[in-house]
Image (tube, rainbow, N blue to C red):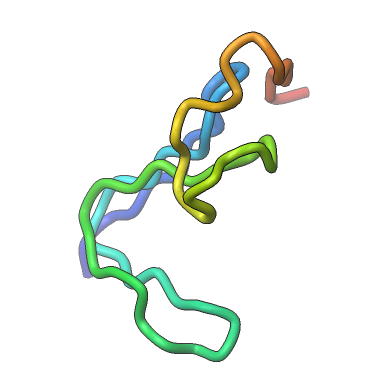
Length: 65
C-alpha cells in the first residue's frame, strides 16, 4: 500500500499526495490522482478543488500542540 499524506498549508488548501480516489457525496469517483489541492476556505468556485480564491481572505495555521 502506498503512503498518502495530507498537509494543511498555512492560509491555503489541503494538499493530498499519494494515489487516492476523490469521491462525491454519493460515493462516485470524481478523480483518481496522486496530487490534489482541496479548498478549506469555502470561497473556491471549483469546489472541492482550490482555485486560489482564498488569497488575502483566509487565515488559518494548523500546528501540532
